[in-house]
Image (tube, rainbow, N blue to C red):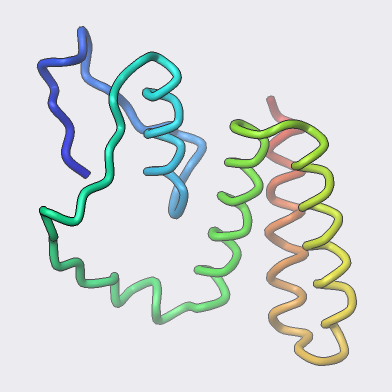
Length: 121
């Protein structure tokens, strides 16, 4: 992500609610709503080496991905979209408990984290 800081009165910030995943999406959506230009180009490319730390714990990676996805839906879509996706993820997790209990448990944990986050607001 390239940011032209001269276009901002004060330094733009990432949302503290995000730890991993979707923070760049949220950043772009918030600043686009304020009238800033957001663009995607194939002219510039950057080689990005994924973190070896997140790959060491795929369950935690999945948990943060689902949590941040739900958070992004809450912040940038309608309540109906959020509820629909939340129900779909929950049903998929419950159905998959007999197939892959470990992953299903991670999905349920991410949903619980999201719900707890909303209760503390």
